[in-house]
Length: 270
Image (tube, rainbow, N blue to C red; front, side):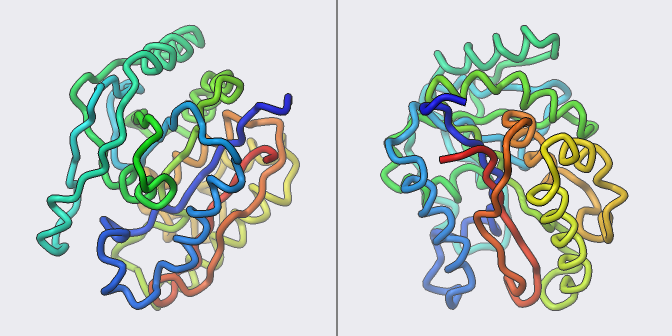
Protein backbone atom coordinates (compact mmCIF):
# COMPACT_ATOMS: atom_id res chain seq x y z
CA UNK A 1 0.00 0.00 0.00
CA UNK A 2 1.50 3.35 -0.98
CA UNK A 3 1.22 6.57 0.97
CA UNK A 4 -1.62 7.85 -1.20
CA UNK A 5 -3.87 4.82 -0.91
CA UNK A 6 -7.11 5.82 0.79
CA UNK A 7 -8.78 3.58 3.36
CA UNK A 8 -12.36 2.43 2.94
CA UNK A 9 -15.17 2.80 5.47
CA UNK A 10 -18.34 1.08 6.54
CA UNK A 11 -20.48 3.58 8.43
CA UNK A 12 -23.65 3.15 10.44
CA UNK A 13 -25.62 6.02 8.95
CA UNK A 14 -28.34 6.47 11.57
CA UNK A 15 -32.02 7.03 10.99
CA UNK A 16 -33.55 9.11 8.21
CA UNK A 17 -32.62 12.80 8.00
CA UNK A 18 -31.18 13.03 11.52
CA UNK A 19 -28.52 15.72 10.84
CA UNK A 20 -31.33 18.10 9.90
CA UNK A 21 -33.22 17.64 13.17
CA UNK A 22 -30.48 17.36 15.82
CA UNK A 23 -32.16 19.97 18.06
CA UNK A 24 -34.98 17.47 18.72
CA UNK A 25 -32.83 14.37 19.33
CA UNK A 26 -31.39 15.17 22.75
CA UNK A 27 -27.81 14.22 21.94
CA UNK A 28 -28.71 10.72 20.77
CA UNK A 29 -26.48 11.10 17.73
CA UNK A 30 -23.51 12.82 19.34
CA UNK A 31 -21.14 9.83 19.16
CA UNK A 32 -22.11 8.92 15.62
CA UNK A 33 -21.77 12.54 14.55
CA UNK A 34 -18.30 12.78 16.12
CA UNK A 35 -17.16 9.65 14.26
CA UNK A 36 -18.32 11.05 10.92
CA UNK A 37 -16.72 14.42 11.64
CA UNK A 38 -13.44 12.60 12.34
CA UNK A 39 -13.24 11.11 8.85
CA UNK A 40 -11.93 14.24 7.07
CA UNK A 41 -9.31 14.67 9.80
CA UNK A 42 -8.21 11.05 9.37
CA UNK A 43 -7.94 11.47 5.62
CA UNK A 44 -6.14 14.81 5.67
CA UNK A 45 -6.71 16.30 2.21
CA UNK A 46 -10.22 15.89 0.80
CA UNK A 47 -10.62 13.00 -1.64
CA UNK A 48 -11.13 13.55 -5.34
CA UNK A 49 -14.63 12.12 -4.89
CA UNK A 50 -16.71 9.89 -2.63
CA UNK A 51 -18.22 6.68 -3.97
CA UNK A 52 -21.07 5.75 -1.64
CA UNK A 53 -22.64 2.30 -1.59
CA UNK A 54 -25.97 2.96 0.14
CA UNK A 55 -28.24 0.36 1.69
CA UNK A 56 -31.15 2.27 0.20
CA UNK A 57 -30.54 1.49 -3.47
CA UNK A 58 -30.85 -1.97 -5.01
CA UNK A 59 -30.92 -2.97 -8.68
CA UNK A 60 -30.90 -6.28 -10.57
CA UNK A 61 -27.30 -5.49 -11.57
CA UNK A 62 -24.85 -3.22 -9.80
CA UNK A 63 -25.64 0.26 -11.08
CA UNK A 64 -23.57 3.42 -10.88
CA UNK A 65 -25.01 6.93 -10.64
CA UNK A 66 -23.87 9.15 -13.50
CA UNK A 67 -25.96 12.20 -12.64
CA UNK A 68 -24.09 15.47 -13.06
CA UNK A 69 -26.25 17.39 -10.56
CA UNK A 70 -27.94 14.73 -8.42
CA UNK A 71 -31.43 15.53 -7.07
CA UNK A 72 -32.67 14.38 -3.68
CA UNK A 73 -34.51 11.15 -2.85
CA UNK A 74 -36.55 11.59 0.34
CA UNK A 75 -36.86 7.88 1.02
CA UNK A 76 -38.37 8.06 4.50
CA UNK A 77 -41.69 8.81 6.17
CA UNK A 78 -43.05 10.42 9.29
CA UNK A 79 -40.38 13.09 9.72
CA UNK A 80 -40.86 16.86 10.04
CA UNK A 81 -41.96 18.69 6.91
CA UNK A 82 -38.71 20.61 6.55
CA UNK A 83 -36.77 17.38 6.10
CA UNK A 84 -38.53 16.87 2.76
CA UNK A 85 -36.98 20.07 1.43
CA UNK A 86 -33.36 19.73 2.56
CA UNK A 87 -30.66 19.83 -0.10
CA UNK A 88 -27.20 18.35 -0.22
CA UNK A 89 -25.87 20.10 -3.33
CA UNK A 90 -22.67 18.15 -3.96
CA UNK A 91 -21.92 17.63 -7.65
CA UNK A 92 -21.91 14.21 -9.22
CA UNK A 93 -19.17 12.96 -11.53
CA UNK A 94 -20.22 11.32 -14.81
CA UNK A 95 -16.52 10.94 -15.67
CA UNK A 96 -15.83 8.95 -12.51
CA UNK A 97 -19.03 6.98 -13.05
CA UNK A 98 -17.59 5.77 -16.34
CA UNK A 99 -14.38 4.73 -14.58
CA UNK A 100 -16.41 2.83 -11.98
CA UNK A 101 -18.45 1.16 -14.70
CA UNK A 102 -15.30 0.14 -16.55
CA UNK A 103 -13.65 -1.36 -13.46
CA UNK A 104 -16.72 -3.41 -12.59
CA UNK A 105 -17.15 -4.59 -16.16
CA UNK A 106 -13.47 -5.53 -16.44
CA UNK A 107 -13.97 -7.83 -13.45
CA UNK A 108 -16.63 -9.71 -15.39
CA UNK A 109 -19.48 -8.30 -13.31
CA UNK A 110 -22.68 -7.02 -14.92
CA UNK A 111 -23.06 -3.28 -14.38
CA UNK A 112 -25.55 -0.60 -15.36
CA UNK A 113 -25.59 3.19 -15.38
CA UNK A 114 -28.33 5.51 -14.06
CA UNK A 115 -28.16 9.11 -15.29
CA UNK A 116 -31.12 10.35 -13.24
CA UNK A 117 -30.61 8.86 -9.77
CA UNK A 118 -30.43 11.24 -6.81
CA UNK A 119 -28.94 11.07 -3.32
CA UNK A 120 -30.92 8.94 -0.85
CA UNK A 121 -30.62 9.45 2.88
CA UNK A 122 -28.04 6.71 3.16
CA UNK A 123 -25.80 9.15 1.31
CA UNK A 124 -26.93 12.69 2.03
CA UNK A 125 -27.44 12.30 5.78
CA UNK A 126 -23.89 11.14 6.59
CA UNK A 127 -22.34 13.34 3.91
CA UNK A 128 -24.01 16.40 5.47
CA UNK A 129 -21.82 15.67 8.51
CA UNK A 130 -18.66 14.41 6.80
CA UNK A 131 -18.40 17.21 4.23
CA UNK A 132 -21.07 19.75 5.20
CA UNK A 133 -19.93 22.24 2.54
CA UNK A 134 -20.85 19.70 -0.18
CA UNK A 135 -17.64 20.61 -2.00
CA UNK A 136 -16.54 17.04 -2.82
CA UNK A 137 -18.15 15.21 -5.77
CA UNK A 138 -20.33 12.29 -4.68
CA UNK A 139 -21.79 9.40 -6.61
CA UNK A 140 -23.68 6.32 -5.51
CA UNK A 141 -23.37 2.68 -6.43
CA UNK A 142 -26.26 0.31 -5.89
CA UNK A 143 -26.44 -3.02 -4.17
CA UNK A 144 -27.45 -6.02 -6.25
CA UNK A 145 -30.74 -7.74 -5.53
CA UNK A 146 -30.24 -11.14 -3.98
CA UNK A 147 -27.79 -9.55 -1.53
CA UNK A 148 -25.17 -12.23 -1.99
CA UNK A 149 -22.16 -11.53 0.28
CA UNK A 150 -19.65 -13.00 -2.17
CA UNK A 151 -20.95 -10.84 -5.02
CA UNK A 152 -20.56 -7.70 -2.92
CA UNK A 153 -17.08 -8.68 -1.76
CA UNK A 154 -16.18 -9.21 -5.42
CA UNK A 155 -17.58 -5.78 -6.23
CA UNK A 156 -15.30 -4.28 -3.60
CA UNK A 157 -12.29 -6.06 -5.10
CA UNK A 158 -13.12 -4.61 -8.51
CA UNK A 159 -13.29 -1.11 -7.05
CA UNK A 160 -9.98 -1.33 -5.17
CA UNK A 161 -7.91 0.60 -7.79
CA UNK A 162 -9.99 3.70 -7.04
CA UNK A 163 -8.26 3.96 -3.67
CA UNK A 164 -5.03 4.90 -5.47
CA UNK A 165 -6.92 7.42 -7.60
CA UNK A 166 -8.13 9.62 -4.76
CA UNK A 167 -11.63 8.14 -4.50
CA UNK A 168 -13.02 7.40 -1.04
CA UNK A 169 -15.15 4.25 -0.98
CA UNK A 170 -17.81 4.26 1.74
CA UNK A 171 -20.35 1.56 2.52
CA UNK A 172 -23.35 3.17 4.22
CA UNK A 173 -25.73 0.99 6.21
CA UNK A 174 -26.26 0.03 9.86
CA UNK A 175 -24.53 -2.67 11.86
CA UNK A 176 -27.96 -3.51 13.37
CA UNK A 177 -31.15 -3.00 11.39
CA UNK A 178 -34.33 -4.52 12.76
CA UNK A 179 -36.86 -1.72 12.97
CA UNK A 180 -39.42 -3.99 14.67
CA UNK A 181 -37.01 -4.59 17.55
CA UNK A 182 -35.40 -1.24 18.23
CA UNK A 183 -34.51 0.66 21.37
CA UNK A 184 -34.39 -1.39 24.56
CA UNK A 185 -35.85 -4.43 22.80
CA UNK A 186 -32.76 -4.55 20.59
CA UNK A 187 -30.27 -4.79 23.41
CA UNK A 188 -29.62 -8.52 23.52
CA UNK A 189 -29.56 -9.26 19.81
CA UNK A 190 -27.63 -6.16 18.82
CA UNK A 191 -24.97 -6.73 21.48
CA UNK A 192 -24.53 -10.37 20.50
CA UNK A 193 -24.21 -9.54 16.82
CA UNK A 194 -21.97 -6.56 17.45
CA UNK A 195 -19.62 -8.66 19.58
CA UNK A 196 -19.35 -11.08 16.66
CA UNK A 197 -18.67 -8.18 14.26
CA UNK A 198 -15.83 -6.93 16.43
CA UNK A 199 -14.22 -10.36 16.36
CA UNK A 200 -14.94 -11.12 12.71
CA UNK A 201 -13.98 -7.71 11.30
CA UNK A 202 -11.33 -6.32 13.66
CA UNK A 203 -9.76 -9.19 15.59
CA UNK A 204 -9.66 -11.77 12.79
CA UNK A 205 -6.97 -11.83 10.14
CA UNK A 206 -8.01 -10.37 6.78
CA UNK A 207 -8.36 -13.88 5.32
CA UNK A 208 -10.47 -15.01 8.25
CA UNK A 209 -12.54 -11.83 7.97
CA UNK A 210 -13.54 -12.61 4.40
CA UNK A 211 -14.64 -16.11 5.40
CA UNK A 212 -16.60 -14.79 8.37
CA UNK A 213 -18.40 -12.18 6.25
CA UNK A 214 -19.39 -14.75 3.65
CA UNK A 215 -20.84 -16.87 6.45
CA UNK A 216 -22.37 -13.99 8.43
CA UNK A 217 -25.73 -15.75 8.85
CA UNK A 218 -24.04 -18.16 11.29
CA UNK A 219 -23.23 -15.27 13.65
CA UNK A 220 -25.06 -15.04 17.00
CA UNK A 221 -28.43 -13.31 16.53
CA UNK A 222 -27.64 -12.71 12.85
CA UNK A 223 -31.22 -12.76 11.62
CA UNK A 224 -32.51 -10.96 14.70
CA UNK A 225 -30.05 -8.17 13.89
CA UNK A 226 -30.70 -8.22 10.14
CA UNK A 227 -34.04 -9.77 9.16
CA UNK A 228 -33.11 -8.50 5.69
CA UNK A 229 -29.43 -7.80 5.14
CA UNK A 230 -29.42 -4.75 2.86
CA UNK A 231 -27.96 -2.61 5.66
CA UNK A 232 -25.12 -5.09 6.21
CA UNK A 233 -24.06 -5.65 2.59
CA UNK A 234 -22.30 -2.26 2.21
CA UNK A 235 -19.83 -3.65 4.77
CA UNK A 236 -18.91 -6.39 2.30
CA UNK A 237 -18.06 -3.84 -0.40
CA UNK A 238 -15.85 -1.78 1.90
CA UNK A 239 -14.09 -4.93 3.14
CA UNK A 240 -13.62 -6.32 -0.36
CA UNK A 241 -11.98 -3.11 -1.56
CA UNK A 242 -9.34 -3.42 1.21
CA UNK A 243 -9.37 -7.17 1.57
CA UNK A 244 -5.80 -7.72 2.69
CA UNK A 245 -5.66 -4.88 5.19
CA UNK A 246 -6.39 -4.50 8.88
CA UNK A 247 -9.67 -3.09 10.14
CA UNK A 248 -10.34 -0.59 12.92
CA UNK A 249 -13.57 0.15 14.77
CA UNK A 250 -14.15 3.89 14.31
CA UNK A 251 -17.47 4.18 16.14
CA UNK A 252 -19.17 2.08 18.78
CA UNK A 253 -21.83 2.53 21.40
CA UNK A 254 -23.99 0.09 23.32
CA UNK A 255 -26.99 2.32 23.95
CA UNK A 256 -27.76 4.00 20.63
CA UNK A 257 -31.39 5.15 20.57
CA UNK A 258 -32.06 3.54 23.92
CA UNK A 259 -30.51 0.11 23.58
CA UNK A 260 -28.87 -0.64 20.22
CA UNK A 261 -25.22 -1.69 20.00
CA UNK A 262 -23.91 -0.07 16.81
CA UNK A 263 -20.51 0.18 15.14
CA UNK A 264 -18.62 1.54 12.14
CA UNK A 265 -15.31 0.33 10.70
CA UNK A 266 -12.35 1.56 8.67
CA UNK A 267 -10.31 -0.75 6.46
CA UNK A 268 -6.71 0.22 5.79
CA UNK A 269 -4.41 2.76 7.37
CA UNK A 270 -4.65 6.54 7.46
